[in-house]
Amino acid sequence: MIKKFIHQFASPKTYLFQVERAYKLILYFSIAVYIGSLIWGLLFTQEDFVQGNSYRIIYLHVPASFLSQSLYMSMAVASFVYLVWRVKLAAYLVISIAPIGAMTTFIALTSGSIWGIPTWGTWWQWDARITSTLILFIMYLGLISLHSSFSNYERADKLLSWLVIVGAINIPIIKKSVDWWSTLHQPASITLTNKPAIDPSMLYPLLGSIIGFFGIIISLVIISSKYQILLREKNKSWIKEYV
Amino acid sequence: MFDFAFNSFHEAIYMNGHGIYVWTVVAIVMICLIYFFMRYNLKIKKFKKKFNESD
Image 1 (cartoon, chains in turn red, purple):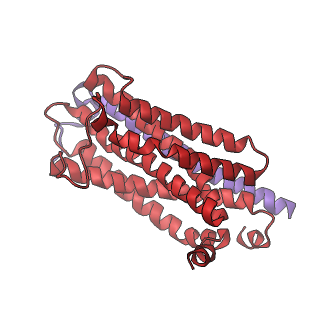
Image 2: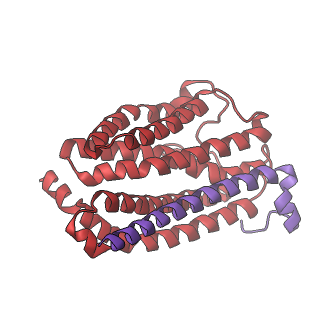
Image 3: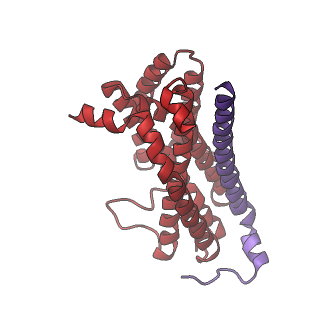
């Protein structure tokens, strides 16, 4: 039953026509929320008592860090779906998400390094959080180059899916690194179980920037997967109808 | 909550010496996002052009 449901709604054709409608709506709404939240956070919240104005990097750093890990987890879920139910769309999504995941991880690393200069006095430290995030970035790059080195897409998809699932072990390590080891990086300010360790006047624009950035990244995944589908399904008759 | 945090536009740019860090990160994020959107839109446009030519 699950297999029938997945195959019915996850055909590349259905997906392409469905997301085409949602794409612009998600994109414009997310841009408005993201830009609005950034203006609010960068210009209308008060200076932090300890970090001064440098804390405002939080509105760019946290959404990117959150998305870099979430994108990898979504790749792992898509890989699992591909390996178990042989859903082609899932394999297309895995390789579509990888460059965007690499970009968000790059943003998380560079923004963190720049933030480190005024707050820690150094732009780099081999501590657990930063090192595990660097490993995530290298993993993204490795997966992209590995996939492009194959001429047989099916073999590439299968190998990539296995590697993504194995590599998912790094995500809880990144998440828990600040609790398991003594790190320079501060613990999470927002958790699902505890009260946020951040003032509401700073928290609301942060939540807005996370939601807005999330939507922008979803839009990016949509056009990236759209390109992947066009490329891989170009010999199918329905592509003519779409193009 | 919605009061402008600075006394002037110049102060908002300078941010007591932290402006260079904050605005550099803003620039990096914007450049990355715009580059990726342009890259994929261009790829799709090129594909459609090639596809229609070969048709």
